Length: 164
Image (tube, rainbow, N blue to C red; front, top):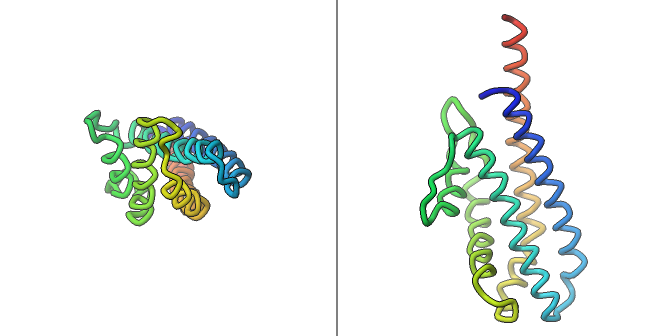
């Protein structure tokens, strides 16, 4: 892995984590509102949350794993491949437990994209919105651990380069 690619990836992942911070602020603002418009807004934030996660996963898959399978179920496959360490290349990006939690947001995103906003079921949105902060915290923590791995790799490559 080229250190410039790793450095760029690290910067892009950090930007996505900043975006996630914005989503968390928005969710706090509307969480207590029970109106249809608030439900649509919460749905949009939950949709964006999974988009943020998936952008990070795609970046890792392309820059480190060498790409991802473009099949009908690529979203789910990509999510679960992030739980698998690749020996000599990278550790797992997220835990299996987190992947299972994120799978609920992936499923919701699919529904959100394929129905009218007024068809959104309030119970599912409320359930996912309640868990949102806890899952976002866990996601951020695990991605920061992965970023530490990237930083170590960049430093290791820098040291190896300076020896030659």
